[in-house]
Length: 122
Image (cartoon, rainbow, N blue to C red):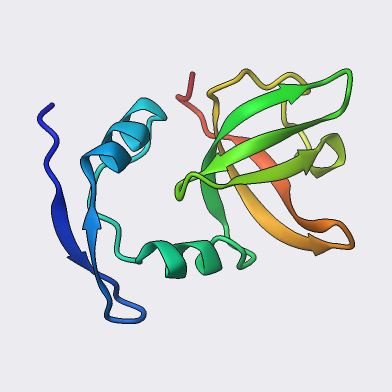
């Protein structure tokens, strides 16, 4: 797929920004949709801290340790604990699995909760 830098305008703040080739490659590699984002990077980071729901990709999860990290669409990571897995979710989630989750503020910062593997993911 040919990638090309593309101009976009944030629907939240009106800032014009570039949807870069590097960002497109990263999103494609992680299995995200390659449509130009509707939010600039700053607004995207703020949006990702709202309750959600959001989609992401598991960077890694260790069931023995009971925690892992999810890569958000912006490329930022969010922590999740085994207690944050939705009821009925598998207890072993492979690296690269696409997940849906909500964000909850905790004393240690934001954390992904209600983590569910999206069917059809790796």
